[in-house]
Structure formats: structure tokens, C-alpha cells
Image 1 (cartoon, rainbow, N blue to C red):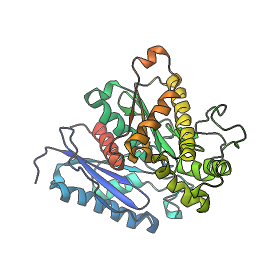
Image 2 (image 1 turned 90 degrees about the horizontal axis):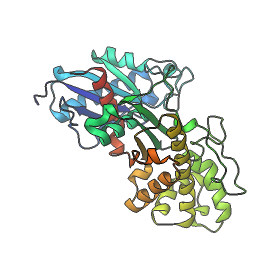
Image 3 (image 1 turned 30 degrees about the horizontal axis):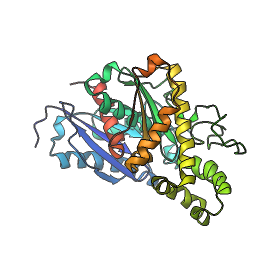
Length: 339
């Protein structure tokens, strides 16, 4: 067994897998690779809690950590959920069974493990880890905004090293911020619509869903002979990044629109919170280096900052993305339960 004084266990709950980490007293993560178990969320609350407990036990086993050394657990899940970890009364994509509606997953896990559990939504957890990983010992004196491009557009706002949660726990829902469309859309391109009911928000463009429903159908009308026109739209949307990595013209036009949208979101952030750091995560982080560097350069070029802000602003990609949720959840728990 490791003699670690006391540790934090971080658990990232997803639609199919739970990923875990352990954060020691010195601020080091003891797991350097993905350690996952099935999440079982589609089976209901009890199987899901069994799976969360298994994830916790697995983290201890992999690191050789004594259970008595654990002082708190950090948990993140996809939203929507309250700041206290109560799943929305209308359910959610991963929590569609009625028994999940209004379920207090944080308290339930706390009762199951008999340890303090600190809840953070998955976008905020990834944002917190990006902040922590980039600024290190300076984290508590810095602020940042992160945009995480996935099926939707997640992320978070960090101020003085802490997640800005908001009165109802819904701060940092960056995907549903409206952005200017003039100069972003092609001249005859329809106004993109979001699953949330909004039109012209960031997620309607900068997400896999935005590609599938809005961007790719339009751009395929401009490139009707493209290879992706032969595939079902859902499959084409998933394949698009590999074309972007190879420099395909149509794919780059789609991803350029995404990056411009994020730049416009960051421009709003610059005038609202004036952060030290702007971080981009998601599939682009896992792409070929040339592509992800190009993407970040487009984001930066379309983030309109004043000279004073340019002198201090830092742009970066979210590191260790697959593990960012679990690690961010652990960082949040450590802040709530310092040694």
C-alpha cells in the first residue's frame, strides 16, 4: 500500500463508462492512463451506483491505496443537473429512465461510500482540470474559460481557481450563448438551429450535432461530388475530422466555422470576465498536430482582444482530455476538503 497521507478519488461518469483517478497530497495524479469500468446508467440508479462503487474500488486497487487514506471523492456527470448533483427533473440524455429524474446522485454515492462526495458537471470538471494543468501553482490567482467540443458544446468558467457555478448551478453553459452570425455563415447558409430550441448559439455550430444537422448538410450542397456525400449524414459527420486532418477543402471550411464560433464566444468572455486563459478541448485535441494547431490559430485569430488583454491572455488546448473529467472532479474535491 502507498503511504500517501490522504488522497482524493475522482470519478468521471459517462453514458457507457466510468473513468477514475487518484490525486495525492502533493498534487500528483497516480493514474497515468485510462482506467474504466462500465457505467450502467441505462440500467437504472442502483446498477449505476454499483458501478460507481466498483470504479472507486478499482482506483484504489490499481494504485495500491488504502481506503482509509481517502478523504473525499470527486464526481462528475453529464448535465443537466444542479450544482449539488441532483439530475434534472426532466431527465437527461444519459439519464432517461424516470427513476433518474430529480435523483440526487451525489448524496446517493456519499451514502454508499460513507465518504464526502463533491459534485461537478463534466464540462466544468474538464475546464477545471485544464486550468489546473496549465497554471499549476498559479491556479488560485488565475481565471480561464474553456470550450469543450463534443456531441454538444460544454465547458466552464474558472475564477481564482474555482468553478463559477451560478445560483442554479447552470453557469458556464457556454454552448447556449448566442453569437453574431454575420461574416461567419456563407451568404446563403441557413441560420443553424440547436437541439435546445435556440438558433444561432455556439453549440449549433461548434459540436458534432451542429456538424450533422447544420454545417455538413449545407456544405455538401456546395461540394456535391465529395466522397462523404455517398454516406449517411451521421456517418459522414463522424468521418469529417479525418478529412480535415488531411487538409480536405470542404472539411476545413466546416471546422473553420466551428473555430470562428469559438473565437466569437471567447470575445464575449473577454468583455465579460476578461480571463487569463482560453482553452479549447474535444475531438480537435485528439487530432493530428497540424490540424489542432491550425484550429487553435483560427480560434485565436477570431478572439478580438484589446492590446492590454493580448499582453496577458494565453491560449491552449485542454491536455489529457480523456482523463480531464476525472482529474477535474478530483481537483474540485481537494479544494472543498483541503488536507
